[in-house]
Amino acid sequence: MVIVYKEDMKRRFDIEHWNRKTAYFYFLDFSNPFAHLGADIDVTELYAYVKANGYSLNLANTYIAARLCNEIENFRLRIEDGEVYIYDKVHAAQTIGYEDGTYTNINTRMKSTLREFDTCERAHIVEHKKIRQHESGPYDGDLIFMTTIPWVSFTSFQQPNNGTQSSNPKVAFGKMKEAAGRKLLPLCVEGHHSLMDGYQLSLFIKGFEHYAAHPELLDEPM
Image 1 (cartoon, rainbow, N blue to C red):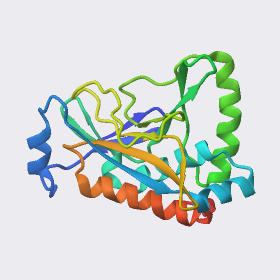
Image 2: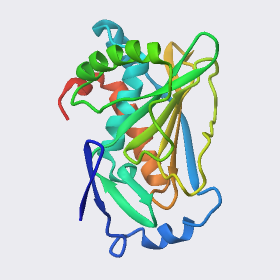
Image 3: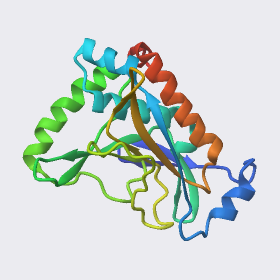
């Protein structure tokens, strides 16, 4: 059965023949079933690339994370009404900060290239700041919740969640720092342990490192 959800499609995921079936049920009733993995990502080449092309580094980070969540199947899985669904495409919900210390969030739409994403979301942010209200809710299944903490180079980060009611992955970026002439970006990725393990979280980290080291790939269509 195929269900229309917003602009994207989702379908039931076959857990009966899933190699993670045992792990899925093991973690399902945990009061906090989310696993976290953090790392400092070398973004030296990415930083130079976005500056040379006039892109936003923040939007580039968001785009890489969203692109990886579409590439790694487990990041498109959601637990909804006691069933597991897989979305054909997922998108980033990104926080937008204001000078008074408050924030709202915007729902971005995934694009084929960084150039297209940067162009669309820059305009989106300008218009969104005039409205100043949240665009996403906690149970929007096709979203990955992302935030940026630009004041601190954290070593770990935990985002709030709604227990087992929300299974959306979450990503946090920290304040960029420098070490030995390299630019390092703190990153923390979080996933529901019924839907993914440390292996998939590691794939996300490794994938981010790869795109950051070869940023020209971001302008090759998905």
